[in-house]
Amino acid sequence: MPRPLFPLLAGLLAAGTALAQTAPAPPGLARYLANAGHRRALIAAAERANEQMPGHCETVEITPGPLAAIERPARFDAVGRPVDGMWVEAVAVKGCGATRRFNIMTVAAPDRTPEETALLPGTTAAPPLTQRFGVAHAIGAASLHEKSCARFAVIDTRLDGPEEARAKGAWRETWTVWACGALIDVPVHFAPGKPRPELSVNPAEAVPRR
Image 1 (cartoon, rainbow, N blue to C red):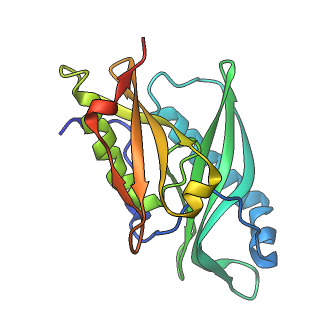
Image 2 (image 1 turned 90 degrees about the horizontal axis):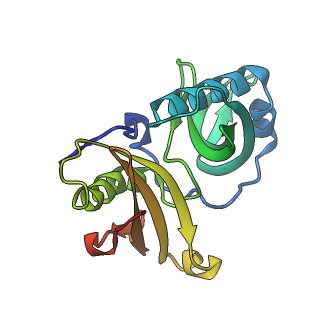
């Protein structure tokens, strides 16, 4: 299997719900999201994610955006520190004439500092764990077009199709794979499944950009 350049991290493993909708934040979480320390941590995570991107822009402006999803309800101690929970925030990364959306997941647990982890960039509605498995499928399809390449990265995702299809648990996305400088668009199909959607990729549908 070709080696991913921009892998998902181990912190995704417990997550299971979708990312597409903007979720209203309960009051305690809303206060924490506005906290200056959390915003700095969010920006730092986006900076790290940007630096891992092939051909990344060196100078970027990073702006934390809305809450994208709540994966596990947040709980706070008496002084407002999160002691449990998992949620995803959209972050705008602007530079070199383009603005990209990064998705940063925060995981909170007792007796440790909350940890911010980058998911796939773009507008994917796939649950975090499904993203992790989907990377290998997308890269496998792209590698058929770039057989001599050993470094790959999913650099963008796009949610295709109507909202109604996703609401029914069956939808399609396009994941863009960077392969040693070439860009390959890979359709990714989702179907209803438990506890999370089932993902499939047909390598024959992958289309290199010219």
